[in-house]
Amino acid sequence: MRGLILLLLVTIALGGCALEPQLPATGYLPFSTFRNSIVGEDPAIEAMNAATYAFAHPAAMQGHPARMAIAIASLDAMAGQFATGARWAGMNSLARQQMLQARSAVRRIMGIAPGTSSQIVVDALVGAARQIRRGNIAGANLALSSPGFTASPTASLQLLAHFPAVPIANHATNFASQYLYPDGGAFNGFRS
Image 1 (spheres, rainbow, N blue to C red):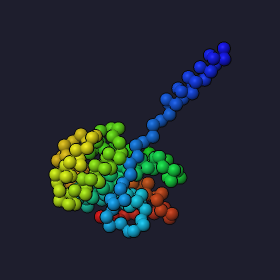
Image 2 (cartoon, one colour):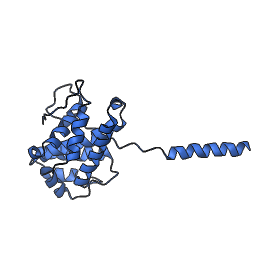
Image 3 (tube, rainbow, N blue to C red):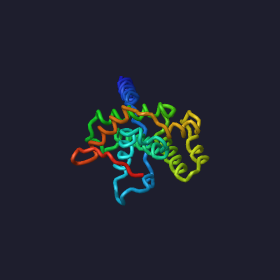
Image 4 (spheres, helix red, strand yellow):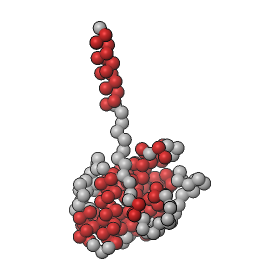
């Protein structure tokens, strides 16, 4: 009888583990991503500044594929960090959820397969941005041929140069940026 009760308890405990939701993928931008950043500036704030500006001003991003690649990488990384990082535990849960929804919407536009690791996305986009800035289109194409990128590298580069407006990303980055600053103000500038 004791064995049966123990077996039942173990089965219930293991069943409960299977029901736990999987945490969203989390990526991190390399410190060197923002080449003109202020020394000592928080990388999370730099990333949100880039994403917030890009999605609030899509017309200004036209013809700037490197900047757009960094903005998308920033959105991808920060959506995961907001959802999983203890640092952001006080952030409004709706803001965290909207960032994840924005990440999914932008990934669909970019042709990034669902379930692709955030770090793969971040590394590919940051790598492509670096190569674009060097004038190395072959290197940018190579970076964008990473696993999970379903569009051709050429198509991805063209899309980065002419990325459409994404209202959910605009709203989500503006809303989430309110939780980055003590006064609750969002940033509306971009340095790259």
